[in-house]
Amino acid sequence: MARVPAVSDEEFCEQAADRLARLPGVLGVALGGSRAAGTARPESDWDVAVYYRGSRVADRGDDRRGFDPASLGSLGWPGQILPIGGGIAGWYGGAWLTAGDRHVDVFYRDLDDVEHQIAEAKAGRFGIEQRMFHLAGMPTYILVAEMALNRVLRGELPRPAYPPALREAAPPRWRASARAVLQYARTVHAVRGHMTDTVGAIATAACHAAHAVLAERGRWVTNEKMLIDEADLRGIDDVLVGVTAEPARLVAAVDSAAVLLGIAA
Image (cartoon, rainbow, N blue to C red; front, side, top):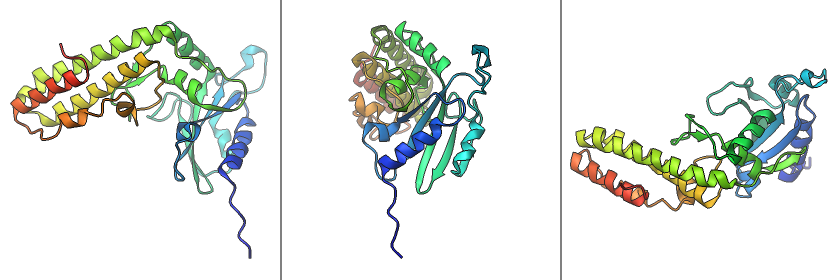
């Protein structure tokens, strides 16, 4: 029996977009991550965001129900489907599904919240939330970055440019955070020979400083996977070579990190 050829990535993308766009309440579908950036490996996951407005739309004169994550079950893709607001890795929750031999991560994005964050970013304002997989915390303008970088598959979605006000306000805030982290590490942990605490603080400060560099350049950030590399701060690794629990060495490492990250007092 002849083997049926597998669906190509582009065909799968189009089919998945059609199916997701037909779910009740979905107003837009966008492809993110390495698949949108063109840097995916064959085994890379598919990161897809579905955009909706609230959990109901009746207050806008429409009696249709808003997006319900349970509707993802109709796709026939096995996996875990979390409710809106569920989970620990993102604001709104998501689903981790398997479509044949492809892993598809579906993220829920409320357009009302996204548009609020766009307005905040344009005014140079943002929050930083503590989330897993983000040493520096997750800046709320990541929602705006997704809109700017993701590949829109279905619907009409905003495509925001990097706001000048955010480019001006974010770097000093990130650098102040990095400086505070290192100062605390030096005076509390390094002098006591707390190696793990000190090294962790240096890594965290490096991510804060990297956010500052990229904001200064007007470059969007959606995660920390290549954050330090893209900010040209990978030299921070050399600061940690040969570090031991000896207080003097830890203090020296903190001071070297501050210089390399451009936040020395």
